[in-house]
Length: 116
Image (cartoon, rainbow, N blue to C red; front, side, top):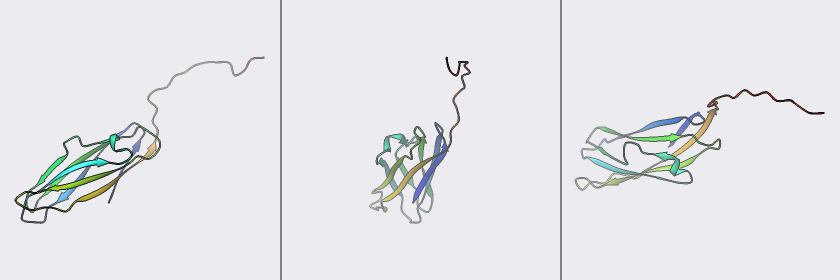
């Protein structure tokens, strides 16, 4: 699965990954970010999530668009054994795209176009 972070240059985008637990056992996951631009992504609410039986949990991923080029990373969710049960390891591709550029401010100046 791919999670896309699209927005204006310098915007901070927050996405939540919903994880469902259809089993009758509690599942726990550790999240890690790897890849070329992994340092630009963060997990502001922590890198662990515990999902009770037949419920869902969320992991939050945050990204601030700093460059015009697309950023890429991978979110890996590795299961921790809870009650002797292991969940499947999951991976998500993280990609960014700049949709617009908003100026931080404007400066007016006057200058001659040329000199003789």
